[in-house]
Length: 392
Picture 1 (cartoon, rainbow, N blue to C red):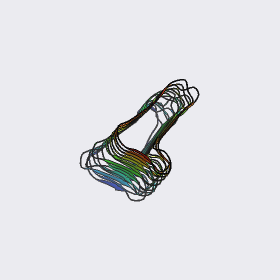
Picture 2: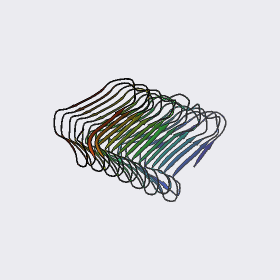
Picture 3: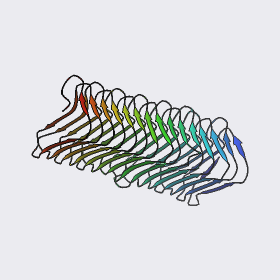
């Protein structure tokens, strides 16, 4: 355990293995920063593996672990709490595990936070990786995880990121599998800052007991690009929400997406457009396969693979000021309601539905309602079937 006052800060290097109740715990009340480098494995048998805390006058926290090392704690694996004015940087080149608290935890009252986890990260009872930019001064938050051989697993959620800064981006790049055993796979929010971006790697999977991927933005644009499979067991596969001051909302799914409720649910209550593109099969077991809502401008849904919903296959509602365009190049099925259901409110404009494959609904195949100022166009080049009512 180490403590520092004055102006010197803390600099620690471990060349070999370290073990203790709380193996490496450091409190810094100086005006300097902390640099912790572990080239050997670190084990906290009754507490933290590595934990660094900065007081209000301190600057940066930097933690680095070497290739092949492991860091474990019965509470937190690696924790960094910065109450000062600087940045947090955590880079792990080996596995990290936590017990009752997170695998990796970073909370920052200062500026930017960057976590790069190139090994497996896990927590038995809590979140795999947790990052929180706590104050209006909190800057960019960046998380990069693993590759196809390494992943993140949480006893609750896999990854949780909260950005409360008035400026700055929240960037998540998950290149390995992510699992939330009793929560979301990935949950990220940027309450007052700029861009919120989530990207997952090809040939990966993101799985949550609740949502697979969930994102919420209060001010900027939101972008989700899922290049691997996504599953939300009890809720949506992918759920994205923009609040009233936010701008554009984009969801791109490059592989299969499954949700216990919705497959993909994208709701933009902000000032920009909604764009959903599905290049893999999408299934919403209880609700809709794809549901998109806009209170801003244009609403666009493009599905190049099969879409299935317990209610409607594709449902779109535009209460904003733009046009609505739905293009379905794969088969669309709405078991209890409609294959495709599109609505424009009074301030919207054109409504266009193009179906290049079969469309089937328990009620109607395709149902449109345009109360806006533009034209309605429906073009179907394959069979459209309504089980109880008309096809179109």
